[in-house]
Length: 73
Image (cartoon, rainbow, N blue to C red):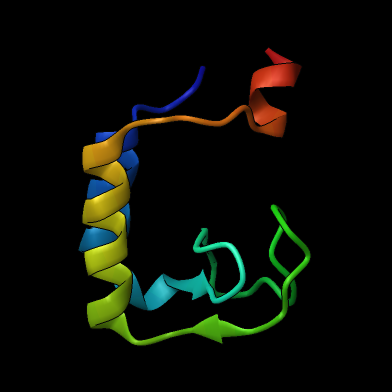
């Protein structure tokens, strides 16, 4: 089951230290990731204030792309 964008944004905003922002595509990824699963970028912004801001922005926008999770459903 696919999670709602607002729900995911809330999850990230509640624990921003577990995530980082890809500086290439702007995706929010797990802090343990070495490369971005969306674009294979390897430069990240780990500032928790920026992570929260990006999560809230993406949560307000809603989904506009198809991810690998959509294909698996």
